[in-house]
Image: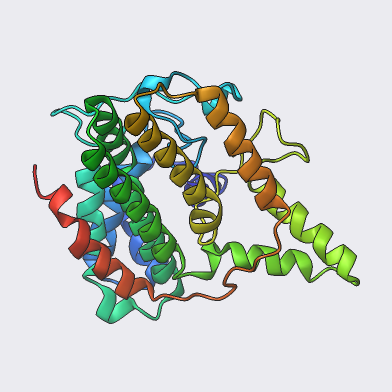
Length: 304
């Protein structure tokens, strides 16, 4: 987006957008391989053709569709998404097209796996591919709860938590997606242990609850899909929701949204003051992770 806009400052002639994007893909990786251009053509017609702002259901306050809108900043209000035959993923872009882009991108790994821009894109595209399943897995959890079936609820919950684990693994393959690097860089400015703790708290707060108190309205404003955030910040919140839903079914009680919201805020606030460390260097390989993800989740993308 930025490259295209800034190029217009120097050349304001009418552009063939599809050709420009195709050339951009090849230029980005330093290759003449037409597959690079085709990858970006498909990205243009999928994730770069989105029609709404979506902060993402996995990284905002956990909720099911039936529990209404969270009392947060208006930009966090959950869209009324329904999984249908026409839109099996509930997304506002063609997830199947993104899958095709990911396959073509991965097919160039033997030639481009040492190219830094390629490694970043491989991580980023497969992060987005997994995240494209967000509404689908939350819908599975919702339907399991509504059906009142504990075993089905547990299976759906395990599926959702597994998605978060895979997002953690994929984002662990590139330095640009590491919470640990963010925290390490922040703490590097410290000259005392007290300053180190302060910078750690500050760096955690600005990517999570945003303000230094529990009950603020800008929580999850940063919406970072980072390694470390998935395991340390987002997953515990979903585990808390799943545990409460399981208890509701077991005891035959109604879900207490107010109690859950307060419990989440306690968890979030405690995390900003924690001192546990996260990897500051990649722990996985983008090519290996992409291949693993393709194999594990292809069943969702071969139904069309």
